[in-house]
Amino acid sequence: MDSWVQKKLLVAAIDFGTSYSGYAYAFLSDYEKNPQGFHIQLNEWTTNFTNERTAKTPTTVLFTPEKEFDSFGYEAEETFVNLIEKKEHRDWYYFKNFKMKLYDNLIVNRDFIIEDEFGKGMPAHTVFTACIKYMKSHLRKVLDQRNPGFPDESIFWVITVPAIWNESAKQFMREAANDAGIDGKQMVFALEAEAAALYCKALPEGKLSGTKDKSLLECFQPGGKYMVLDLGGGTVDTTVHGVKEDGGIVEIHKACGGPWGGTKVDSEFINYVLKMLGEDLMPNLKETCAWDWVRMEKELETRKRKVDLSSDKPVRIEIPAKILFNSNKELKDLTSFNKMKVDHDLLRTFFKPSIEHITKHIEDILKEVEDIQLILMVGGYSESDFVAQSLRKKIPNLKIIVPIKASVSVLEGAVRFGFNPQSVVARICRFTYGFQCHIPFDKAVHPKEYLRVVDEEDICINIFQVLAEEGETIRLDEKRVYNFSSSHKSDKRKKITLQLPVYASKTKRPKYTTDDGCVKLGIVEIHPPEEGWPNTVDFNVKVYFGRTEFSIKVKDATSRENYKVTYNFLEEGSKTILYERS
Image (cartoon, rainbow, N blue to C red; front, side, top):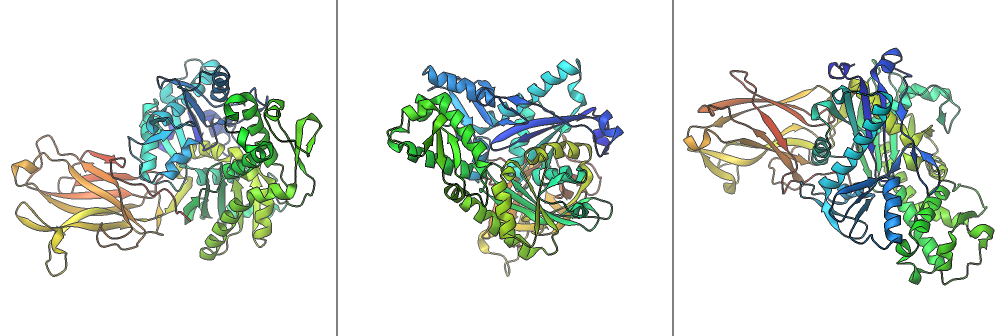
């Protein structure tokens, strides 16, 4: 166990999903008694729409007309429905599935605005901060009931993020967490696919569905190799892991994915039902029949999971009476108890675009990586039997298995990661990373427009100093070193803050940061000592790329003095490459 976790009496994880979110926690005392099978506690969320108890609640948040936080999850859904029925909802702000906004927008900065369900905008930072603060406060109340006086400083927080997120999105989430009251020194990110793998690795034999072959658990033994297919509501993320001799996990194919999650199927489902009921009368249905509309959405989501690969029996979907009353069509396939019969073949077509994208994505990875033993399907969308059945049929030569509680595998795995963050020992660079720097100008080599004069010296700007190449395997604590000198002879340069712009590229060896495909992610700022810079400074920069977050240390190469360093990956004009878009 890492030293910075040893003093924490509890590890708490927040899984912030596109469709559903939740938290889980475990005590250090339980972990120390049984590191493999310790008890992880999850909250039970309830809703009046279905009377179900679930381990996650909808990622839905409601703000007042004054943009003050009101409620989250099922409570937000129910409160907003009541507002609609009283016709008092127009000035409120209602957000759902908003995590996808970070996918849809490549430019993510502190001023990033997202729109609610009715097109009204709020700062994304405000929305995300409020959600994290709610989850933190909810756990705090639970702890106060069971362990009064449990100190905040004894909690170590883990927040899950997609493995395909870049540094801008991670900094966005970190700043939101900080403003939600989580001390940055008491928090770490867990990559979702890695967390799911840790959950599966800890399962006892016989707890994986889709196979009775217990030998498949050998993929978690030294030399094993497996793919994690994380099927969420909004996105599908994949990565490939190998297992080292000491049991550590190594990423052997860079994380990638796309927007092919379960919400696409939901949309197809709802559009079909609306078409059957009469599209011309339906645009205002969310307001005229608000409570029944949400009930119908929940019903469709449940039925979606019941679709089967070979069944020829129609699926019966209950349509609330009030919605039927607003329909202008006579439904021939309506049974007793207001249930609409839908042909199974038709329902299967709703999944087709999503499954075709996922299948091609898997096949592309299999062309690049040999000897993968199996695919682990995790995430809420993986609980659809039809998806698992279809992928097994389309990829018959590779075993595909689904763990129990697939929808909370990331959440429980994140708690495990919190106790043992060094369980993942190496990761793959998704892009080529480096600094924008300058070197002495050579008129025979460098473009004339890149010539600048600094302290009476000719330099060439826009040089791409490569630190880590795309596709490279980098260990958790492996550092990349960059040495450079900076001149500060003139008085105006004595107190300046040095900036090292950070760039990414899909090209392995870009020469200039202006080359095609180069994207500025942000800047690293090196702050001067109180007395100012000496005339010449030789810097020693150590960068860690193998961790879940970018980390850097800067020293004076001569005195070994550490300089204060800050990062800014959210400055205006910086971009984040979130996904390998297909």
